[in-house]
Length: 425
Ligand SMILES: NC(=O)c1ccc[n+]([C@@H]2O[C@H](COP(=O)([O-])OP(=O)(O)OC[C@H]3O[C@@H](n4cnc5c(N)ncnc54)[C@H](O)[C@@H]3O)[C@@H](O)[C@H]2O)c1
Image 1 (tube, protein in one colour):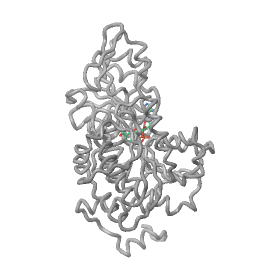
Image 2 (spheres, helix red, strand yellow):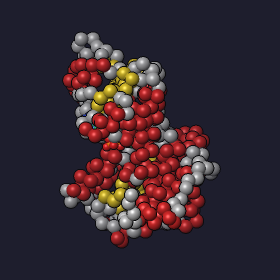
Image 3 (tube, helix red, strand yellow):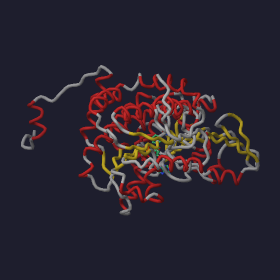
Image 4 (spheres, protein in one colour):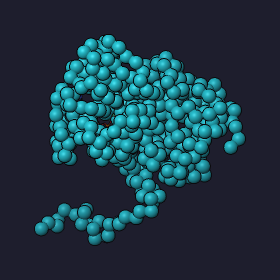
């Protein structure tokens, strides 16, 4: 592929990594057949022709396939990272040099750089925002109200982003429509569960090389991500403990065969802790005080607030980096606690994020929602919309087709039966 040089004033680690990134993007593409079909149609129909789109997503090989599909559909795309540790620098280089997509993202960037990059993506004057955690929308509402005129709407990838955006809508602050991609069944039932399940353990294992068999693995939060992590940890021989605050979800975990108990109790027996709640300070000082020496703590929820690292820092008498993505904190009584990936989502910090086969569905929803937003801009108001069922079903249908799996259809008699109320026993 020829080098493209018109990628504006990108800020990436090293353009020289583009070749490596291109190969990895190609590798992911092979597992993204649904997005490939959408790309082909986008190339023909140009539904996003001339639309300026700023994406704040994890800069991974899967995201690269989404961004290039959007570009193939006519969009004028800028991208920045949705987490300081999730950028794959070779992918950023390939996007800039080989696809002409301006990218503002460097793995390990500090907080100031992270927000400078978000502002750079917004300088593109987007008509569509594509968020993973609502940072673009939040920044527009806090500091870039001038963009209210320009933005026709946005899409949101993750649970935490949807929670933030619903809070904005409830407080009448939200100024433009949002499509909550996370709420599609073909997103959270698969990406959050199987994607986070597999890649979170991948991140923990790559960072530590620890054996999961025989370990007490404590999962805080039994939502879509939590049940994925729990089932994969059990599959590798761990003894899984679940902590929850929602009685129904706790009950589901019990009936799935996991031990459920309050976190102060679990803190005493856990070897490995994983937070996936979307909440703040779930693992906190009293839990660190109770933990065994050698306990490993990791987070796979969206923000790095689930583990109260400042509290642990204040308790510690010493700290050192013992491996990539593993920091040791020594407590006054000599116990050691190991924090992975600075408490940032460990599947993206220490591994490569979700496998492409699952991001295929999430990003098919993203692409189709961007198209939907452009087509329906005139009728959408400033609220958070679920993904239309037609889009959700279409993604499932295409994914099944790509897997060579066929399913049944209702007979006319069955259809009539389901629509009637007169027939009983
Ligand atoms: N790592 C990734 O790649 C990735 C992927 C998808 C989602 N996420 C993020 O993971 C988080 C969880 O997402 P989800 O889709 O599973 O959400 P969810 O709402 O389905 O589940 C969260 C669960 O945590 C529970 N919870 C809340 N506070 C708790 C506490 N103090 N202790 C124990 N449990 C508590 C809730 O009751 C709920 O059952 C979000 O921040 C989401 O954005 C990360």
